[in-house]
Length: 165
Ligand code: CA2
Image (tube, rainbow, N blue to C red; front, side):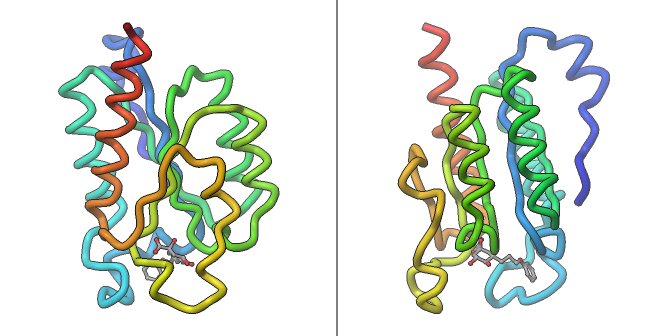
């Protein structure tokens, strides 16, 4: 999946809507097409559609971005700071276990985030059991498949609701 365009309806008719950014790291564009025994049958487009529909009921815009390139993910996080993104849901994928740079970008923008993994990284190889993101995350969800993104979204929506009061 590349970046789904925000519809004109979203940007023109919902100028005051809160915004959540969903970031997907490398190889997650293959979701639903390879290794379904580990990662399931749901595609990134399915996940985006379900999240956007749920958020829309609360007048919140969900933007999704997937990249196989560390620098593009970092650029997207940096841009989020000036775009009024209120919350980030991130599955850093393989960068979970390697990327100090992406961690630093999230720390620099100070946007709260939930870390999501489709698989239970603690039940897999030892190298997957360390994350550069977990200690700064508002929460970490792993092993729940695509449902984990919806759980993260519910939390993000509750945080945005609280921030409005
Ligand atoms: O369980 C997760 O969500 C992971 O973040 C997925 C990463 C892996 O490196 C992490 O340890 C855990 C791998 C993403 C690869 O995604 C694919 C999806 C479908 C087919 C092949 C790869």
